[in-house]
Length: 122
Length: 413
Image 1 (cartoon, each protein chain N blue to C red):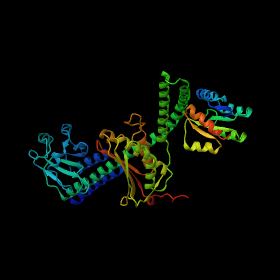
Image 2 (cartoon, each protein chain N blue to C red; image 1 turned 60 degrees about the horizontal axis):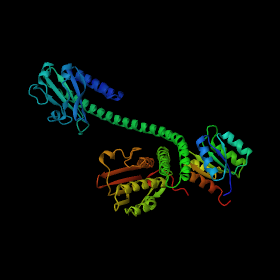
Image 3 (cartoon, each protein chain N blue to C red; image 1 turned 135 degrees about the horizontal axis):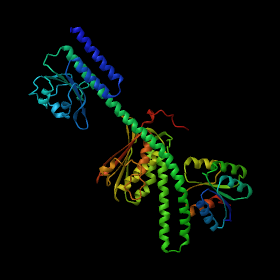
Image 4 (spheres, one colour; image 1 turned 135 degrees about the vertical axis):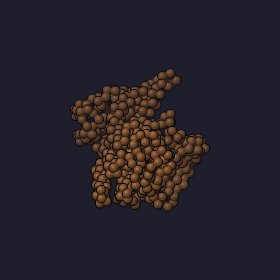
């Protein structure tokens, strides 16, 4: 698949760095935002192909970020990550336009598979 | 004293005692009033009230009036000695021969107390088991008047009623206390579980991403490979445990619709069939063709059945047999499903714990399967029961009220 420009929004360093490691090894370019606010600014400044978004951030509700990003950049693909996976928040995320839903913890293969699935047929 | 005035005084005493019974919720207060007022009404030296402790089968002194410490400290009386010659409920046993009466265990002390006559009045509700004994101590021997007889019988009956009532209230109280703790525990557990999931899954995600990534980078056969694989496997195990904890703690309201239990059984069996086949374990279905509907959340009940089926599978050796039955108990208006195996059985000492969260005898078990199942069944106003004999097998039964009896609208289209 073609190299993607990816933004990871997660307040946990270890998640951001691990995602960056796995995805850069697959040839993608990865930026990191540690807060919801800086994530929204980054999305406004840069054109990304994909956002990996943690649903629980200290400064903002992930669902609100998802909603705002989808309103401003409707074509942007967003994969929602969460440490507290429930059926109802998965359904809510998909309704708000998330491309996929990745419950933590996940393996590198699961991450790569989710990213590839989001761009299937492109 | 004329007959009418003595009647009046008994009436007043009875009124006081009944008043105490209705206004006081503490049994001890009522018993104290009973012994004091009985002593007063019969112009006795004193009175003693013993109540049967069902745990020890002993009559224990619960209230006394007018008697010396030394006399009271004789200790409890066994049921046998008292009941051997106990009168029928509603009768009064009069003892005048202090020295030779078999019912007096300590004649010397009794005599020293100045007691010359005793009245034993058994406390019992109607014809039921005797729950207590009221003993009245008189300092002189005399005939009992009819009023006195009536008075004692009335007191005995009222007293027995109040003892029973207090017993019931206390039982209810402890039941509610237990429920309240469970509810409290449930909601704090749900909050804690959500917190744990958030906090632990993030570091686990770091471990899993790095270890699975690193595993691909070590050359095949490297000594690091085994360790990395173990890290990956164990991290995934943590994930399963946390998911189980969340399922257990989450207050999931069942989406109940009229469902045929046979359909749920068939789909659950369909899911696990392959697993059974691989282990050469036979699964036998005996479904009631004339099945009635129950209001069930199909997915949740399917989860319960799968859990019970897999437990049965793990309990039997290869070539074991697991039987799934369904039935309608029209008399009790219940739909039943039963899963029985001829496996290793559950040791008696474990039976009481199997529904407790985190109780497991399996090496890799989370100990949440049956706890989750229990919660689901109870959320459906159903019941789950177990019978087991080590070496012979185990039988789990779940039951739910018939759909017709439940006040939930018919199937939504």
